[in-house]
Image (cartoon, rainbow, N blue to C red):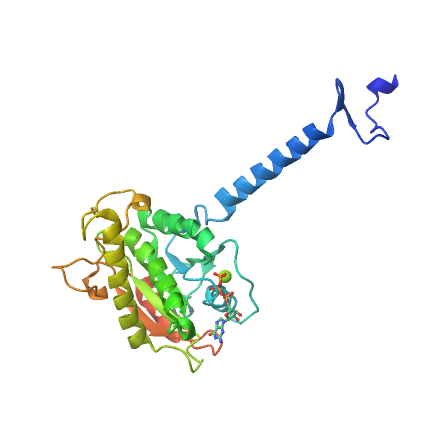
Length: 277
Ligand SMILES: Nc1nc2c(ncn2[C@@H]2O[C@H](COP(=O)(O)OP(=O)(O)OP(=O)(O)O)[C@@H](O)[C@H]2O)c(=O)[nH]1
Ligand SMILES: [Mg+2]
């Protein structure tokens, strides 16, 4: 066998191919393309729950980053607290057992979503999938109640919830939504009733500002399927009145709790009530 036909790597560092040496630039290109393909694969298939949201009755944990979703998911799923890191992809189980329904119902799908703004598209997709499959039993929108007295944190939470409602309100009857006011053991935590009213005021402002971007209040139609292009200025619109959660199709309630103190019964009871419907 001649040296040219040998498959050994030459000492120069160049890789020998069937027809000679591949210059480093080709190798760099192949590596870059492989990495890009891997990133796209992860983005498409790993950042969302895939088919799980359509596989059975589903609860989705959503909400801003740092609100305690993964802490809650861990407590619900494993029955104990554990340290968490900011999530970059969803945590999914198709085998979640609600405590008082272990004997009587099948397991549920429980999905924990990342709250970072750049990763929220996966959450919207998951909600869409679950809505179309009619498997959605509820969205637990987790907020850090101790941060809700800060206008920018309140605004961020309200904007995110608004965008979720733009999806759920397109379906007749809407979707049950629990705003889980977490970290209620902290003395700075805003109580549930006050939080509801703060969010309503914020929603009114968001609706007005989005109406300005599309023309006038209610000018973009609810039955436009493309929610991405629709600012949602129609949300909860009734006789020109200020925004009220009770004017929505979706049933929205706010309940205090604390993963840290193990005070989650209000949220679990809410899930159990919906589990049998
Ligand atoms: N004081 C207090 N801290 C909590 C509580 N629940 C969660 N935390 C803490 O809040 C921090 C963020 O919790 P995570 O569960 O990681 O937050 P997340 O909503 O999953 O955040 P992302 O994954 O970035 O969307 C962690 O340090 C938790 O320990 C609570 O009830 N009280
Ligand atoms: Mg998380």
